[in-house]
Amino acid sequence: MTYDYIIIGAGSAGCVLADRLSESAKHSVCVLEAGSDNNSFLVNTPGAFAAFMFLKKYNWSFEANAVGDIRNGTPMFVPRGKGLGGSSSTNAMLYVRGQAQDYDTWANLGNEGWSFKDMLPHFKRCETNDKGANEYHGDKGPLHVSTRPVHYEISKRFIEAGKQVGFKYNDDFNGEDQEGVGYYQCTIKDGKRCGAARAFLKPALSRENLNVKTGALVKRILFKGKVAIGVEYEQAGQIHSLYANKEVILSAGAIQSPHILMLSGVGDAKELVKHNIDSIQHLPGVGKNLQEHVDACILVKSKKRDGFTASLSGLLKMTPHAFKYLFNKTGKLANSILEAGAFLKSRDDLDSPDIQLHMLPLLYDDNGRDLKLMGQHGYSCHVCVLRPESRGQISLRSADFKDAPNIDFNFFSDKEGKDKQVIVDGMRQLRKILGAPAFEDYHVEEMHPGISQQSDDEVFAKAKERLGLVYHPVGTCKMGVDEMAVVDKDLRVHGLENLRVVDASIMPTLVSGNTNAPTMAIAQKAADSILALSRSFSD
Image (cartoon, rainbow, N blue to C red; front, side):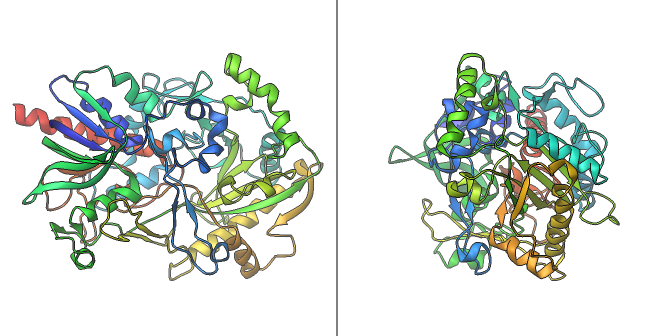
């Protein structure tokens, strides 16, 4: 079968592209998604997102290669959303864009048209924000961004404590200034998750020129010389081929987009030959430049029992909220459990925030899979490095498209040790907040890292024992003009025709915040480029 555009992956970027490219009946579009349609109660229920850490139907459940002194040598769990909506169907629904300087940095690296001034209209086009239309927000987009009610007292105490120790309150992390403590806005509408599938893809499914194939695992991109002509994929145990009249667009995410490119013969030729893969285009940057928001936590035992526990009594306490949600889509299950946080400077002499805090009314470690820990009464706060210096990579494990790739984050590998210092200094800033008077009637003891751990080396060693991710991998098909760049400013793969990469993998550097909103804005911008090219051919 033949389509004008074939989109690989129905995640945050793929859903936006499917909507935009199929708006005109002139273009036929096919989306290939390895997962299911994700039309389930769990996906729609905001408060159920923690369940996805245990369910492989909705989660690729990758594991990074083990490192001896990180999590005591156990592989780091790398969750990625699977099914329509991708990770926007399994995430905590926080809507954060990052700082203007993040995008200005992209432009300064030679990517004309990617400054914050250029990107802001694409963010605004995506959203309907309940703050209303203004300089920073839109009110006519498909993606609903809402200010949420606060259900947990510990979230309010966090805000109060932050102000007590000198941090300012910020009522809009996506406004003029990101810095401060505040409440997160979420992609929730009428008490239900408003991910990319609900916002962009599902309203477009009635179009006759849009075809979405689920359960379709891509094997490789097909080429004729240097021209991408189609895609080979497996569905229900059978191998099929699709052909593209105009373009193949890879939107499988920062882990799987480089994986598919390498399986298709696009990458470092020296690496491909090791797996008997013929080189179509030598691009040594494919899979390199991996960045992630590495995360450390402070766990505190609580006197009070008004948070969440995974104990039988804790689950029974949620029963009234379950009925509220079932009957009128309100209560705790209609919200993300992650209500409050902050963007702060790890040191006072910095120009802008370099850490993000996530406050939780429970004891959270190992992606929520440590149920024994979560069965106790307590609260936790996580601090992540917003602009890491360390770089990792994605590489082939084998030439079998069903084998997961190797994931090497190489955390704290930067030569000057900046990432280590940001983690340590960030933990100190967090300790100031958690030690404020607002927490006095909650605090029993710091369970981790433990108040006896005070020196930089002690704090850092304990941080690595429970090191985590914020689920923001980017950069593995980076945009740019240098020899390690994979795509140009229009996201076309260097040296090849009719092939683009459109997802978080194209980010040259990681944004200072959650990556879901930027990924959708990237797709909006890419759709403009693709449609403009199509119009120029038609003219």
